[in-house]
Length: 266
Image (tube, rainbow, N blue to C red):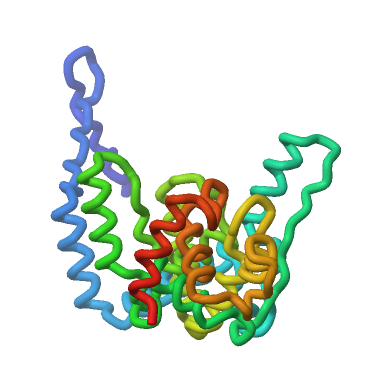
């Protein structure tokens, strides 16, 4: 038996088959996407949780791979810091052929005057032993001072934040650098005891041209070890820290600021 011939679509205008209409596309706005995602979560809660967990682990791994290690600082002292490298390169650019001489001598915390330890904490971060890396009250006070002066005059950084900046970062001001600095501050607080953070800070912080750390500063300015510093000498060194290349212990500004600081020391 012969098969019936297939139906041929009727020709449209000009003898051509009628054009097919495009299928209507579903709306794909944010609202529809969120509804679909919520439905997926309800249908596959375990699978969704596993995906989120994997994503978080990957993000955390990438974050740690992109940032310097911290755990070794619990028992090993840091070498050349980012700040030291910056000063060395600036000197070599300004004085080609000359060797940059850095003065630094590491001292454990117990061999640094208690007066200096107290003065630096009182001057730079008086809630150092209370916060976990960030002092939001200090940040708010700094923001108010900046608003009153109409410019960025006060930073509000804690000792932990300053240490992270000194150890690893350039002074560039960018959102990415501030984010990395915050992450490294949290890692310092996680891995290190407060006294260890203070010990590293007092040994790497800048106290003048080529002068880093309390021991080098004490010998350069007062001709004595960091352990032998008295109350007034400690206060003078502490108030130099916001501008170590511009201030000296015998300047009128430092004398005035150190006298105020001494009244807060006990």
